[in-house]
Image (cartoon, rainbow, N blue to C red; front, side, top):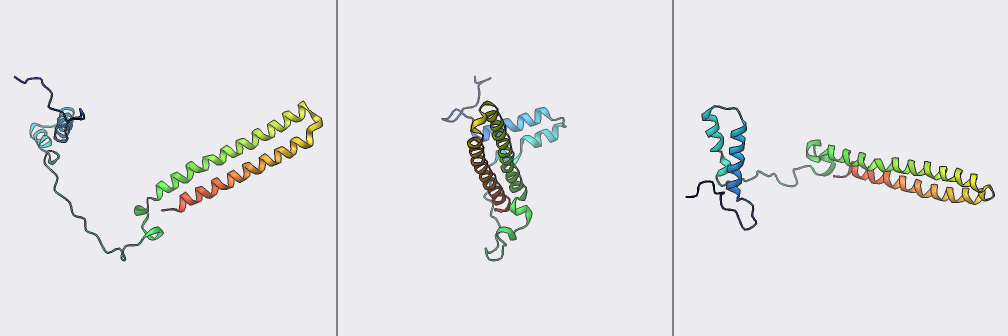
Length: 148
């Protein structure tokens, strides 16, 4: 008597694919408010049958536009805009670094006024590094925006 026994699992401990499809169909049928006939139709879905191979219709490669010539839906333009926007967050980090750099210059001058020239030189060197970083970030964001 195997009442209440779980279905056999594969070697990895996970239910096999037909078992998982049946479980998902039963869950969907249980939580949906449907008539009896539509619930039976849901359980008897094609997910339980082996899938037939689907052949894609493909045009010759010379006919299809490639790169920036493709339509926007094919290029996934929204993803490139999101990547560019996320990269541009680093420019805000550069601006914050410049603010902290000059705040440290003011504190350093207040503590030791005799080293004002040296501190200002070091501040300008740090400013150059931060500006270089900001320019590199903007270039990478442009590459992300206009890449495929």
